[in-house]
Length: 157
Image 1 (tube, one colour):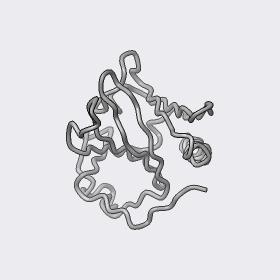
Image 2 (tube, rainbow, N blue to C red):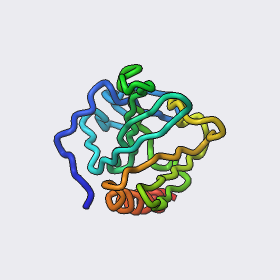
Image 3 (tube, one colour):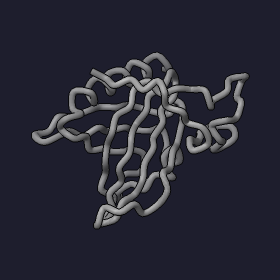
């Protein structure tokens, strides 16, 4: 089952990527909606290996938005930077699919353009897609999370 976190509070650390005005703090008001009060119902942990570092993070799925939070770690598993966040609308996603593996799985998120995820340090060659490695204990949650995300992408077409 998917884990629901209703007590999460994304104050100033989450950023919102908007087509018209670039990246804005989550506390800004857009169309009369206070983005600070937006909760992300479904959270999914992931990691990636962009070069010599590791990137650990969570993917959060809200009503009509997706939040990616990540932190870089070096070879000795010590944090290399601050916790960073990015929030954007689901309509900036083209597709999402999850493939099971023997010891985990791979979640592939394809975006409309590379500028949406330009702040995330991705491995070489991945311009507008993000391949997240999901651990084995989160495989079932990842399947349900991907199905929910694909439903929201289809609703926004």
